[in-house]
Image (tube, rainbow, N blue to C red; front, side, top):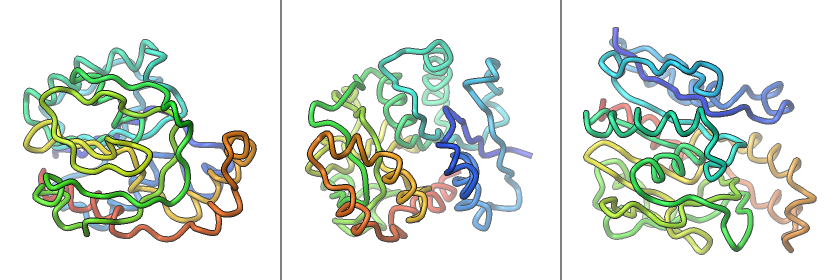
Length: 238
């Protein structure tokens, strides 16, 4: 049986894991009811298991977020790049999220680094580009939709041959497409409102330090069903 492989690139905060599950569990919760019977979900922890799975048995790849930073070029992260390049060359469907988004962009020739405007956290509006409105994965979404975000780094320079599908006031590269079935997003479609709330509570001091009001961000948290729907729709391309 072929698998949908969740590539785990880090661990969520302990209180998030205790109350809601780790990053891979959040993906599983969103995908399990929509998974076709001929596929199963598997997890590969790339930070702890150095041997990359054989791509021949992989129907699709989802890459999680992480508290690591792509620009730190940790050995396990750098080792993922040639594997991702092979997956792209093989037209293996991929969807990278947050760290996965930044890692894919870097692997394919872009640059990810700390955003000069600081951290972006909370439920924020994301806008589709004209290309996004015509994209087979994103065209189901309204031109403006809300999504959960928490990141200090961003894709600062997109790869030359990719297409920008979404952006917002903070980030020019909220969603990118690299090939026919290879996408990445800066936002977190797997997050629920309670998970986003837990992240903001943890980041109160850091957000205040950059001039934001955590209580206002907490009050603005809402469900992001449209962004979350990308995960289930991704399965249609496997």
